[in-house]
Length: 226
Image 1 (cartoon, one colour):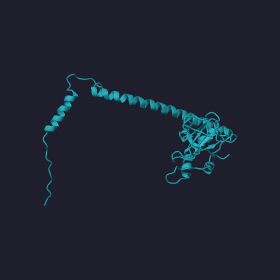
Image 2: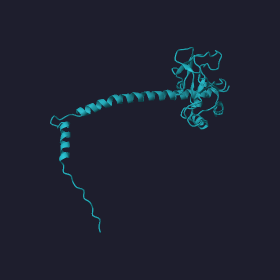
Image 3: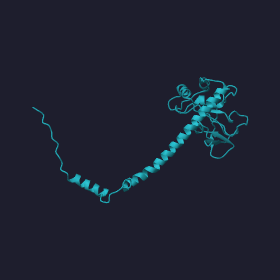
Image 4: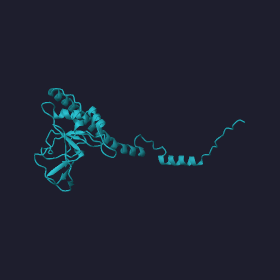
């Protein structure tokens, strides 16, 4: 069926039976259950607002960088509703898998399509509507081929996650190492020291003194020929 907008009633600052997601729950492209607010309203148990595992949430309003970003809801059933700034779509399992649909929505061609078709006035967030989402061109290979494509994409993402983790570890090691190296350099511990060498402090004082007593050389000016 068509993508459906969510609902955004006033939030309350106390725990209630209804948790409504915020945009931050899907901005990364992955569902993050910690981003929600409580609302004090009775949402019927058969309402379309209650999310089910496999539902795809699309940000229908955000900055141009994020408008159209999607994530697959993988939380427990009937535990969250979604806000008006999102649309919910559900894959037709006989035609397309939820994972393949999510990756299709996340491809750069789709992201560019959403940016180019977003509307909004100055000062307001760009928005896309259901018709824009439904008009997105998507290649639809057989389900077996979809599964193979999804598998390869997930392998590449896992590899990228490992590289990112190693990069973070390397940066952390450099951050810890640099102050230590600088301290050793200033203490003269990076290279063997000659006890007859002049201390750095004495050298700096001598250089400063030599600058202050150095004669000032007047600049010569060229006389313009008459």
